[in-house]
Image (cartoon, rainbow, N blue to C red; front, side, top):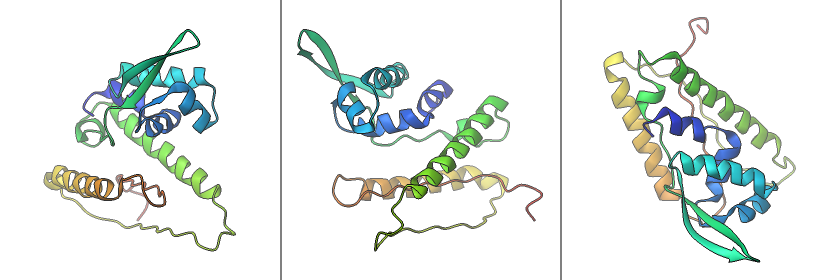
Length: 179
């Protein structure tokens, strides 16, 4: 994703869920039923995603005299261009967008983990945290390597078979007072 307008349309937790449901062609009503939302609310989000060029109307059917659109995401995964989220010198709005997305992502992870059944006999999970140091002249290469590695994992394990796992990755500058 190269345009900030596309990122702003996508980076809303509810729209991300709608977009996930549109990996396969579906109507707003079908997505609404899966997400336990109203079709009108889902349609609002789908319309914003269509306007941003992230979702296409792939078909239409007539149900009881009403035309119902069938929508599908344009891609299986979306990557924010480093020009939007990490390069030195970006305008403040873009920096806030990326940090805001990280905060939303962490809230989503926290909510997902809190919703797990901790009495289940097996909850396979992994958490990794660490610090790396990247010289300024190698930042772009690092971001490209990270994106490539993650895209490889999403491609290799992104099918419809097997147990579903969420993978959240956050990379951000370490604060000065965290010594």
